[in-house]
Image 1 (cartoon, rainbow, N blue to C red):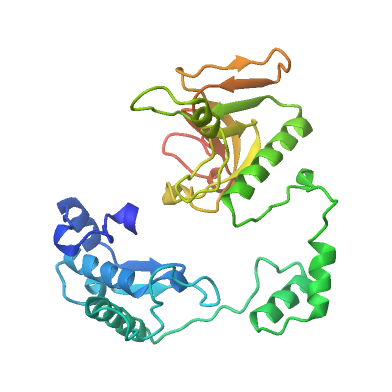
Image 2: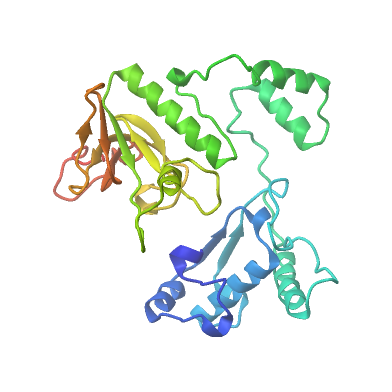
Length: 312
């Protein structure tokens, strides 16, 4: 909502500039979906409602958009710095914060139609996992569940079977980057393919970096301000997951699986082959782009072209 629709939720309301093109776009909207509602705080919902009302020149809730859908699970994460919209305001809030939260809480209470999804999709093929998840959700886990997790999930001496196409989930950037690097190196050995190593591009406004800074720029830290690692490994054919919505009409969205079939090299950063390992090349800068392939777009039809001509 912030990036794609220019709501500028963190700006003071009097400083939120309204672009004519954006207003025209919002006036044509008839459906608004807010996902991960458990993480939606009162101040944010109040700002969303206020901005959309200005965009649509309407005093109605959400600017009179006919259909508004909240999706999520309140057993999941709560807001980080705000109060959840399902709770009334706290007496300790400032008057302004309390007013905004009360407005958001009242909006929440107006949603009277609720659809509860009960079918387990992700764990549909594993009955034991379904039962375990149900007990954890209900707060009824027992010692047998702990034993199951320790025997099936915690194996200190075991290696990750990357060759099976396993998906590994971790909450920390540091672990995610290390696992991605390990999986890429395993994929390269498994398929006997070429490995491209791209280093991040750095700009120094003053003097050249110190030796310590030069080492740090190639490290893999775990900071909220560092969204990507300093080193990117690429092997043709490796599986990737998109982590943000890019082209929704092409289904290039957050969580979509793709196959990275090739890399577009930036001419400024040509390949340097290692003499000790001809299958490894280094680029002293990031790539210009990546070519992705997906089954979700293979049947797309383009006027004047036969089906299957464009699949990447």
